[in-house]
Structure formats: C-alpha cells, structure tokens
Image 1 (tube, rainbow, N blue to C red):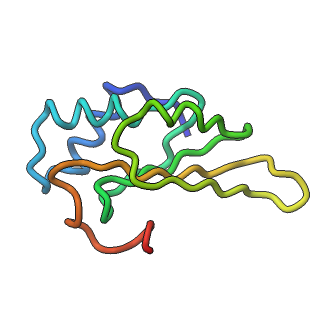
Image 2: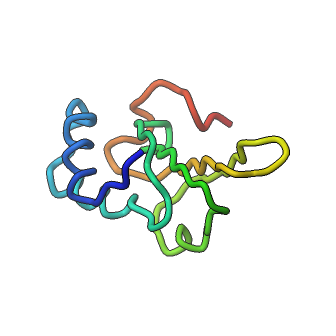
Image 3: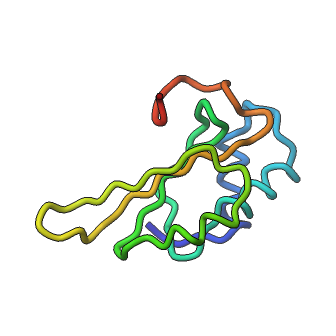
Length: 110
C-alpha cells in the first residue's frame, strides 16, 4: 500500500467513478478531502453515504485528523491482531453529492 497524494488519487478516482457523471473539479476536491495524513488508502468504493474509504495504518490511528474533514457520515476502526493490535483498518464514509444511494448496499450497512 503506497501512500498517494491528492493528484494521484484524483486520477484513480476519475476512472473508478466514471459512471457517476462527476466533473473533474468535483473529483479533485473529493481527492483532497479524503487524503488523511498518517493513513494509507487501501480501497475506495461508492456506498450508500457517498464514498467509503478503507484506510490502513500500523500505528494507533489519530482520529483527530479526521475531525477537521467535512461531510463524514460514519467512521469505524477495526484493530487486526489478537495479542497485540499492530495493524488497523479505519473505514470512513464521506458525503458526496451525486453518489449518495447510487451503489449496491455493501460496506456501511445499518
């Protein structure tokens, strides 16, 4: 899992979200919004909230870096490891106009 910047992520999101008629400016703003220092993006998918991002880290996640981000619908942290929590998945659902409710219901179901 390589760390990506907003420009690299924007290119990946453009191809992944091509069916959703989002403009280049909207995708670039989204990419800038979802890049979080200290967390590596492992996967992103449209979800019922907009877009859900799976971040991974081998350090205890600093969730205070998420609080300044706007439009977060839901987040959860899952520690991997039984004896020692040495790897974490942080899943965050971001509100995105034009994506809400347009994907199959998987991931953050309530």
